[in-house]
Length: 246
Ligand SMILES: O=C(O)CCC(=O)C(=O)O
Ligand SMILES: [Fe+2]
Image (cartoon, rainbow, N blue to C red; front, side, top):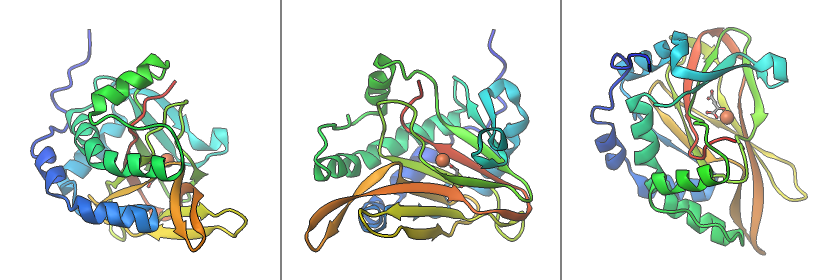
């Protein structure tokens, strides 16, 4: 029998908030910078309630202690099915907003893959290839913790954009712990970026690579993300990755 899950955060109003975001601006920022911020996507209570789920082992399929794998320091847990309503709603309502960017990028990079309009259809594609495990995750950092630059690839099927929502408030709950991105350009040095976030803000960013318009045509940059050292306090984030894992 599945555990009672009616005391986890509800999805009340989240679809409406997603619909109200300025997706034209997000898409422009993604094209120009490879990342975009949606301010105040989640309310403070939703952030606190989500962060509190970290202790609820029955909601998760696995726990990763980053230090054991050389991933950094701190830990995270992947949600099990059924996903908490708020996470499931974010995943299905944000996905179609990002499909136009994903398809445009794919074509611009000369890739064959195109993404279906609906998240359920894309998940079917993942499942058919043996990628059946949910990838949304909660991350928890304490003093001295950090997350090494990485890419969240879990199999052949990769949706090219992902979302992370900061659940803690900088300066109040923690110091340091900035979301960091690097873009590795062909035959050039990497470009670093810091993404300033407050509690409830969502960062949307490229998972693996993205097209950049150069003076001599389009080229592909390789993208990684991570988190700088948390200097004090505690920091939680929720990561929404749209492909499932093998
Ligand atoms: O904690 C963060 O801000 C980054 C989390 C992360 O690596 C992810 O959501 O994939
Ligand atoms: Fe990540």
